[in-house]
Image (cartoon, rainbow, N blue to C red; front, top):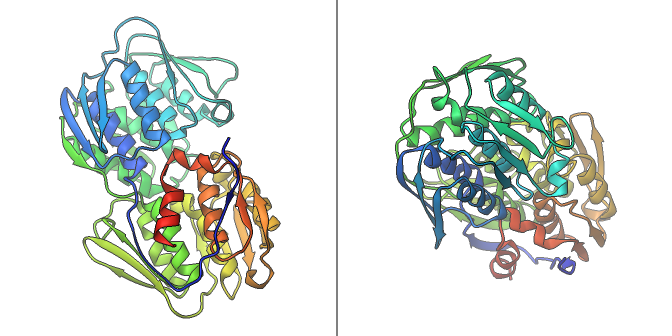
Length: 424
């Protein structure tokens, strides 16, 4: 484990142009589609974080030829033909990878066991396993029902299933991605209201890149027509969630930060974050090629439902602590089951640094804390998003230390280098 990272106080105003790695959400969706397409695809600007590398490792174990060089992945899809011998896939700490790859592996005829490191084993998978069982997949739990390890064996016998929409959009996405290869396509009934809708819309957009534009997302039903993916050469846009950290530095320190490649046509729901900063007093400029956030005046609190942009909750909580009026974050009770408890763990660590914050059932209350912020050593709880949000806090709080800083390798291995070079 690396030594604690001491965050350097940033004297504003800042003026920086930051390049952000490709979106792991887009890349992992594209990799599944490419794996099922019968032929060669190229995925450009793929991120080199742990989640993407875990996906590539799993695909290689399934027998696909997938190589990464200079941010470009070349992959030769073979359809759901994994052979007949039992296989073992290891997803590391990658929740997205483990859920997508479980559904993908369930298309084949051989038994495939999916596992991960101990923190991933503690995360919930039950709704996905239940839905796969409804599709006719043999699902055999390992140590605990609804957890990892789990063994799946297809092929599915039907495309009809039901799932709760308010637990994790990753379950819904995993089923959508394999939808074209189910008998008659996919008819997925949602038993509760769908959360994180932008992530589901993103899935449909990526599927369309690979020739499947017959996806329908209705109030209580998602359908995918039967067929197959076609190979494609695609470009992965910068990760909008990761872009939130340097943009948040502009908000808390003052000055301007520009993100190249994340402009008007961004697919990711988290690309809305600059608009939330605008509601707090920042100015936002967008073109087709970039987004720029600037703050010259006061920063105000916000009352916001973040169900559709939940990965940005830790970042928003830090920005809210520096505002001059209280903030309330709502609609995100489900993020307690992410890499960490992103409400309880986040609130507990921020209190160490003097942030006046309370957690409630589905969110956080944050009161102005700038004058009371103090040095603190903050634990990441194995969560890359907490680590990077704490870096934003440290930019306006002298003496903040982040434990286990290497956890950022999950999504942005070069984060600390970016921080040093862009805000020196």
